[in-house]
Image 1 (cartoon, rainbow, N blue to C red):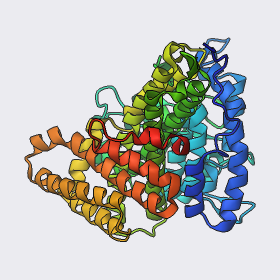
Image 2 (cartoon, rainbow, N blue to C red):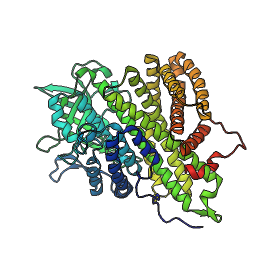
Image 3 (spheres, one colour):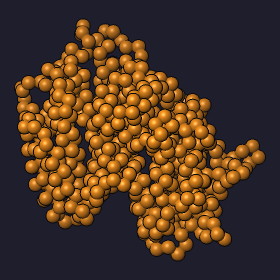
Image 4 (tube, rainbow, N blue to C red):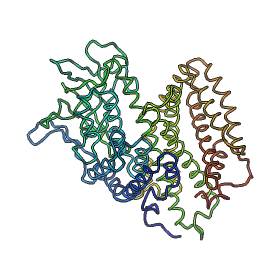
Length: 555
């Protein structure tokens, strides 16, 4: 047997050999923007596969953030130590405009970027450092809230720093929602905002505050004295982490969480003791603003998931291509070919579908979407965040299994992928929370009917093809299921909702798969064929092994 000596995935660039992502950008960016994006993503893809990846391993194993509560004089400072490599990753990543160019002009183009481009950057980053993509996510959400809802004075104070690309001091962002007594029940939050003179001061505790100590400004939900109970009584505030003299803004970090994975992001318990805070937007709409930011964060979560999936695929493919057993490479065995083939198909379709969603999100957030677009955007985000997070865990585990015993050893990247993937099923809403979002959309907006209509219209424009017929048959079945689901009592809806959400995600992915098959043919036709057969359990025992037949083309 030949033993592989290294974990390198056989690539020095996560972008240049990413056919699906490159075709996404060709479809969604104009010619000038595409040329710019290709140059920039080639450079960033190399950086992510090289230096950022090396630093990520160090941060995870030896250099994770540490809390320094006091200085040498015993004064409370609540500072976070991060290693020098992590600081370099911060600088290099934000300077690409991953956050800033959504909200300000790209100098070389003379206009703003968009979320398609930003999420392409995030996808590449998540191959190497999904833990650091969490602070990037929080900074994106902070920029969104400031840009859309802050009064001009507050916006000008913070947004240029949050969108810094090396042109000024960077303020990373944060969104603090969770309190120990509330958790997902945000309406139970008790952090209080008191008017002192003409300034608001915050008092209370946020129990799970990610990017604590690293953020320059945090977006915090708090209840103004006398406001109504429940979520509608919450106001959104922008809270600078430090005063103008550099001292802590009357807040402290009690401790950092000792997390299973995503070690790069410091998550802590933050206490406010008179922290200066600035109202953002309408005082009565804080929860609605934060839910918009949450939907953005959910897309980031999905992007991190597909980044982990692809890194696992690259590592597994490289390993089994270079590992010999019983006299020949593992890739000559049908069982290995089948596993890799199914992995490749699911990965391709999931990436294509997430960027299909992101293109709609760009349309909605730019004010160009219809009311139906807004509803479908919320629906797609809920079902796809759930699906991608679950698949990231599954395929990170699959990558370990393809490595065998080596896959479980921390010398390889695969254990970190699994640890980092697991949190994605929890952050930004568990499957139960996302299922409740589906129920709300069905009950209030008849979203299930809009979904069937949208999927039917997309299938109707495709040619008469055997793969299209498969999806049409599944849509007919799902339509009947959705009609029954919409009539159930509340308790039964909650029982069925997660399974219904999964079927809707799979149907959405199936439509995207056959669209790509028709548009690009060849490899993408075969990837769609494998995806549909696996997803809808179409293969019977003894039937042709498509993953084996197509292996050379799709893997």
